[in-house]
Amino acid sequence: MYLNNLFVYGTLLPGLKNYKRFIEPHKPKVYEARAKGVMYLVPGDGYPVILDGEGEIKGVLYETRDLKVILPEIDEIEKFTDVESQSLLVREIRDVELLESGQTVKAHLYMWPPSKAQWLKENGEVIPDGDWARFLRENK
Image 1 (cartoon, helix red, strand yellow):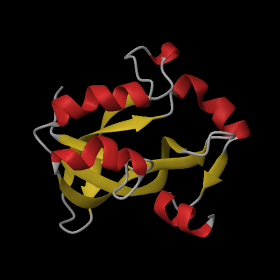
Image 2 (cartoon, rainbow, N blue to C red; image 1 turned 45 degrees about the horizontal axis):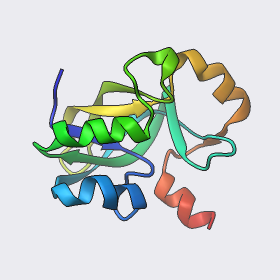
Image 3 (cartoon, rainbow, N blue to C red; image 1 turned 90 degrees about the vertical axis):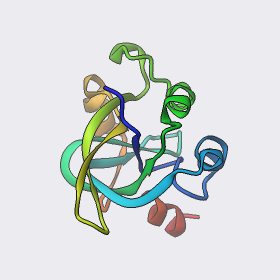
Image 4 (tube, rainbow, N blue to C red; image 1 turned 60 degrees about the vertical axis):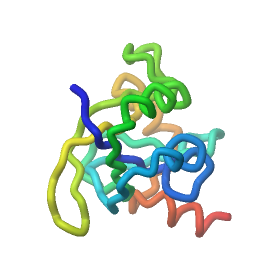
């Protein structure tokens, strides 16, 4: 399924390095948004990932017709191969709520593979409020 929407919660947030490199040149519409899940800090790597869960993940939704150009580049940095056992992260289509309107939309979202969930739960650090931007501000 192809969508023009991408929900991000980590290194692709506005102002961060990967945003400037992969997203900003395409000038997408940007919406404050949230999705369900539990955010973890990957040990030793310093970036966030999410697992299924009932928590809240704070992020933004990018809307752009250029997503068909952007996704293959992001798939590469997220090491997504479309084969879970060979991918660092998996890309799924999930419900995302736009904060301003309360509207729920479908969006592409990168997640930690379910087959590796136990390792993450045992070794990762939970970021309880699911807010990577706040975590970065408070831990610099």
